[in-house]
Length: 407
Image: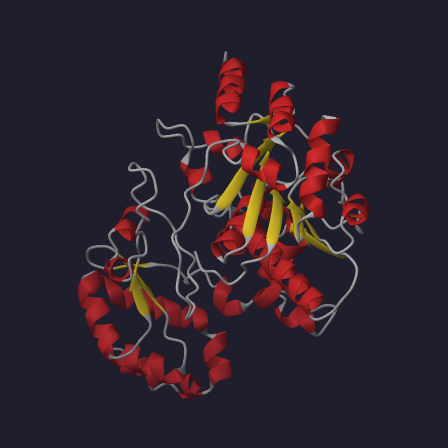
């Protein structure tokens, strides 16, 4: 944990990846993130369980948080959450707006409880547009945002990226939105601040960053960045595997073509003009594809690295676990306090010149219910009453409720 946000308290009412990943980043940066779960828990707890109580998806998105379990459909649960909100800096959720309103988590309701709150809603679609009430999951946003359609532009068939990209991109927007609001508040801005992060708009911005292209300047301009859309822009086969090669500047192209024995291409009159070279990118990529089959991946990596031509072998997921660079930096290292069966964790990839503190492993459902409620002014008998009435849950009560539900 990197203690840069110490003193900032964040209430996370999040599930699966979008909200929890954003909450984990803030917690990794030192914020006191209190995760509020229903009595049955975040559904990610049972995703990829691998024979343990909490699954890998939950483990990798919920460290360094305090865990409290409340039934927000009951008045007592909402009252407890209001006490938390009153003593916090940020309320962040990733549920649909109508559901949030019913639970008292809408902006107006939260601002009445805490007039200095930063309220962040991570949602599917912006509330000023006609799609505002649509349900949204990662695949839906990949399709709607044009991301899945990019593949159809060069191979005729739309395709989902095999990663939950929309959730993770939106989570990063949540983090910078909250941080910007906190800075504004620290600079003297008064009153509550509303932050809205719609997945659809975030992904459209992400996709069109380079692909707006000619449509930036003309109504009839065609979107699409030609180099990126080339069907020959792909991993290339070598004698024993696959490699990515990207000569980008004219000098890099010359060095690659010399190594590949294709100085005839560099000698063409059009090659010296960057604009023409870009217009003939398909021809250049075809040269790359035809040249690489004669050597192994390792031979090409050595030769092109020597010439400072950008290249990389194509890693599969298993390869990353043993990547020598990641091993050098201790990328997957686990803090000693984590359960013994957790062999790898994922760090924050941003480094700061600040001494780090030990990470806290993701807790059991309701692990911190008692301590958090006591922090909010409940005495022990009141906590007992909330747990006994099914408004709140501790780990033992949560386990009983979940086993009963499973039965």
